[in-house]
Length: 192
Image (tube, rainbow, N blue to C red; front, side, top):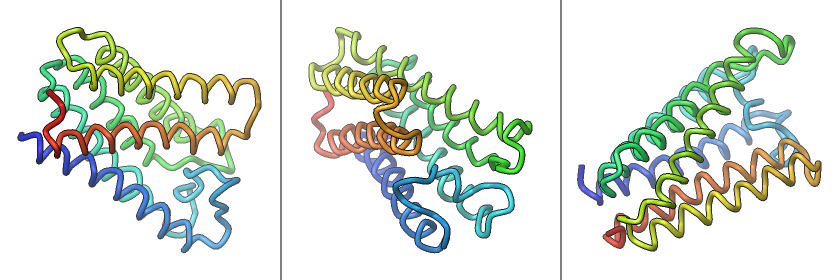
């Protein structure tokens, strides 16, 4: 796949997620953009949960996985691509609806496990990009900056400097921000 096509997939993933978040958040009368987990839009038994889970998590995850895989091929680091692709798959599997009535239910655990393992794979993918001396300084720098910012946000969350839903927003901002920056670089062919 060409750099331009891969860049378009990355931009589409970011746009799809945020457009769906806005639409489904506005359609969900009890959803608060600042204090609720994004997963609330897809909680088991919630109106429009199926559509949110399919479009907001599922389709976005497929696009993120595809972007990660082809990004790795383009920068000639297939392991990094596989790790970034695993994040997309983890994101896709968060479409398994969380059961708010039973937080210890198998589906609830699967939902949390999917995004946790996916995020771990994404960080390992960034680490691989950040220390791969054969890559451009821009690719290495953007990977290291994203991983560093994510680390700060996660430490802040552990220290309870902000609520868990805000921490989720910060994590998603870093992941989608890096994806968007990397996708735009592919469109401008500045990824060599």
